[in-house]
Image (cartoon, rainbow, N blue to C red; front, side, top):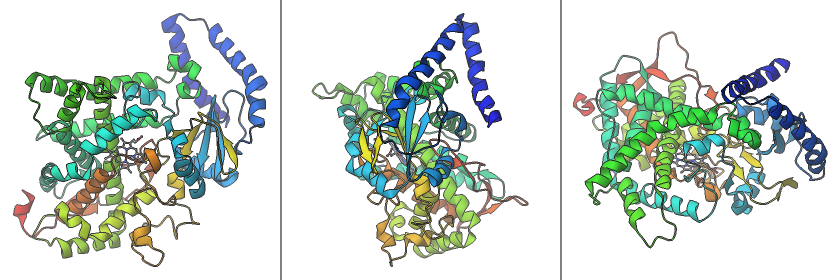
Length: 527
Ligand code: HEM
């Protein structure tokens, strides 16, 4: 505990020291802040909190609350606290009150019965820095601008109609990935990296008709993946600026600074693409960027789209759409390689529907119920956003009989609900058949609509994921192709590690590096 305390505050003081030396500010200000905050907490906040029928929670220290005992793997840490304090508990994060919910009935209260109250976000400093001040869908406050942004994306880029119309793009990119893997048969392949690059290419093709090709493929794939991974890491990292908004301007952990260094990697590309398109003056392109540029010119729009919002939307698609889908595919591949009987069943299903002398097409997918169950089971055990994106109530509300104050940060632990033994038989087992059984309505009961609060990997209610249709197609089509075209084995002497690393987006702790072997009867299909 003492070591944890020291290691928690050491970087804080290192950063303060950096601040003094660079800004010539006296330590007096910081000491004064600490004394005033302590007195405020003791005299005003603490007595108030005691009277408000807040949920139970672990005892905390003055000022810091529970910050110093926070475990970086928040999803497992919150589950362990739920075992002690129950399905709704509070956690004091500096001056910010966190409320953690781990029961389906209370999630229903939050995301269904009081959905409009909880449809706001508590934008972290890293989120603001990543999205031009929180101008995107994920962080925009619930209101007309958010509605407009979401409508634009869902109708024009993420709808089933649009996705049907750009199938050829997905097909081309997936075939390129197959060609790339074909050239590496018998050698080690980092599956997540290749899948990530292919997903990113599909997204950028849909946005402005451009992809990463040939020689660039290996290098740039790894580089972009690192940038997105670092961004999602910073978005999930506990940050003093969020817990003590009064200290935000000091950016003590330099989270904002790091995010500001990453954003130009994509912003540079956005600026270049927008500049080229405006210069061309060709308004006929059929992609998302052109649609957004045309929309900007519509003078009668009630909620006009600004250039900042336009770029923030592009950022949402790149960051929100790539890592989530790619990590889900990587987890599913790892689970199938580890559970060879599951892999065998998926391959048998593919053989019956597609055959070995053919390539998978997206039109085959609806005939592959077992593969769909594999995707569902992967998202049950490894939901891409284990705590969703934290919600913020715009009014004080009663949940489970307890007060949830206005502006608190509400974490919904979907990861823990998906592993709850009172809901799932053998919850830690990877068993896709649980989604196929008819006895308890399993085949139809659990879908991605967010209507069942025992299974909701895409969230629920107004803030449900905007990209479900695209995620479903991407994950299923990629998985079907990867296991139909290749057999996969682990490197000799290595054990497949399935453990997770927490972040706003969950990822595998160690990358899945495995060896592909050809499976199709006709080698020409790989070209
Ligand atoms: C397997 C893949 C994916 C999973 C599991 C997933 C899951 C989620 C979840 C849990 C949320 C938060 C819901 C909440 O806070 O209540 C979310 C939000 C969001 N997702 Fe996804 N997602 C995936 C893929 C995608 C893709 C492909 C896109 C777009 C290209 C996308 C775009 C978004 C956006 C824009 C939001 C913010 C919605 C809002 O705040 O209104 N996601 N997603």
